[in-house]
Length: 108
Image 1 (cartoon, rainbow, N blue to C red):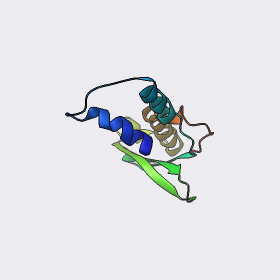
Image 2 (image 1 turned 135 degrees about the vertical axis):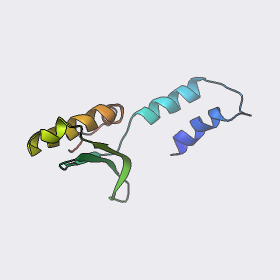
Image 3 (image 1 turned 60 degrees about the vertical axis):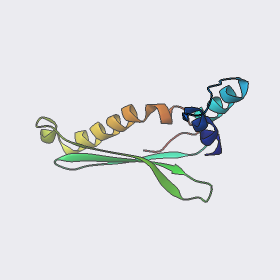
């Protein structure tokens, strides 16, 4: 979080913009997630839901993103295993940028 805070300061109105070696290093460090990630998904007859969680230093899994979506008329006719696969694909598409940057394999 300290890394993000330092970069966030650049967005302040009174802060003069400067992007030098230090900021570039911070940005690259921020992109490399060194935490384990887990995606939990569920599908019902009318909607899908997903939670992306990160394993923190205290060993607890904490949510970092949520996603839910109503199924359209065609998707509501899918068999349950197809609905479950649909929600997995949606999660991978939506959180691709986070999951690709982690050093560890992630769970679904």
